[in-house]
Image 1 (cartoon, rainbow, N blue to C red):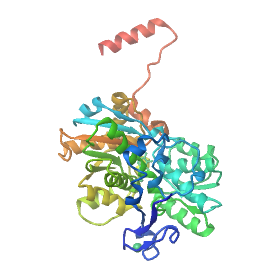
Image 2 (image 1 turned 120 degrees about the vertical axis):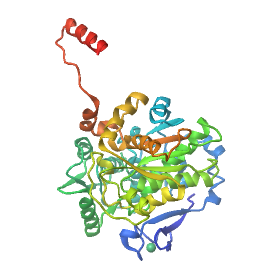
Image 3 (image 1 turned 60 degrees about the horizontal axis):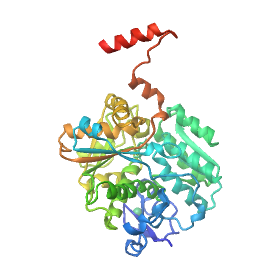
Image 4 (image 1 turned 90 degrees about the horizontal axis):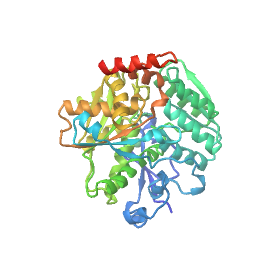
Length: 419
Ligand SMILES: *Cc1c(COP(=O)(O)O)cnc(C)c1O
Ligand SMILES: [Zn+2]
């Protein structure tokens, strides 16, 4: 049973049947014509309600199948995606100056980032279309994730990454067997190249900003948050949900999922959304502050996953903050680097720079008076720290070199104790 009823352009409002539009709105074109997937929520209540879900033993994102645009269970890839742990992190809360803080560890997904939620969905749609090849451009994680899911589904993949993508992410791409173009340019240039290649060769285009189905996978993080908090803190939900922002698909998905779980009666009220960008690349923050439209900018930050000067899902990303009464903030690369060991040491969660940027953003939002000391926050930690070892090592300090000799260890332990 599918409750997927059609698509609607977020720009002009034109609607399409489920099989009418492949990617963007024909009237608006791919820069503006982002489509939103529509469902019949009233009809799905019988199947998707707290009682029914508590009896569901599928501990993955597919436990929310009625809320996803997939009709055929047989096309779902076998990799285990979602139902990631949600940790109560009191030492992080006191460090950041909030009443309570939870961390959802998305680094626990099969290719170690949040992007797996999107690609699991993307591969199902590519299989539905009997695609011969699937393609995307990515700062790194969407690519490594697509490579993994294309491998799982047995579809060839072609991927465009900027030359600066961290080595570990590129290693993932090659190991999963994708054809990889390392574009000697920016992510924005890789994106345009991928769009052209997809059109010219007829490949299935899974770029999250133009393919309306990917964000449906991403929203499952919020469906889980809603269900997990029902157990953890019955009757209440955190005041803020925090996520780092590049193209805006993640934050857009986070907000959509929350609204749906509110409609379906899983959460008592909607939280505000905090979108976190880097000081060196903050087109959302600039547009939000100035009440204006998007002005593409440079992308100067070590947080490669959010180094997106021209966000491709601007309208959904902006709506998440506007509709929720939330905010955008930005943080420096120094603050991002500091947040890596902070989250690791105070919560035991090791994230990549864009993964921990959310935590750095909470501290900034508290300083700015956007978040109160009495409020509670849930941080979506979007990517595993092993994906970018160079940044981690910059933040972590040094080893203590000793000869295999106990005297040297004794001296070092004494020196450390008196330091
Ligand atoms: C992609 C990504 C983001 C940002 O998601 P967008 O949809 O581009 O806004 C944040 N963190 C990590 C680790 C990512 O890979
Ligand atoms: Zn339109």
